[in-house]
Image (cartoon, rainbow, N blue to C red; front, top):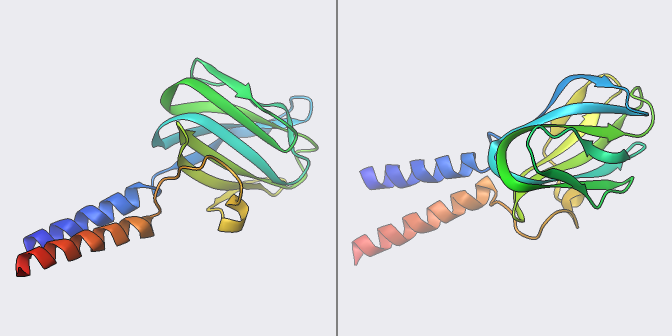
Length: 176
């Protein structure tokens, strides 16, 4: 019985740790940079060396979209009005950066945010600005279609199924 509880507890911890503690958060107030911008902090996902954003609604990104990285060795890569990428020369676990947006700060917008390390996604989030405040949510599968690297961090449900499969194997071996 102790083994069963241990396996279930480890499975639960692994499932929760894959997405529950990630956080991209706004810092301070919006500011003018030609159009407007917002400072953000990414932490809580472990190592990451890639950031990406895709415009979902609104006027898109000002160029360059990513600016003022607090970690050394980060640069913009492949930016357009609809998406932008930033790459770090080495992984970091905590970084501040700015994102520039087209249009007026009073106009609503939303974008898809991704943090990853060497093509392994560490965090997905939809950031929505209503003209005065940010809201963050988990993206749906239709929003994620065609975005990001091909490798991904397993969902909590996947981790739970792996734990149940391991449990079944352990129980089966004990009966033989």
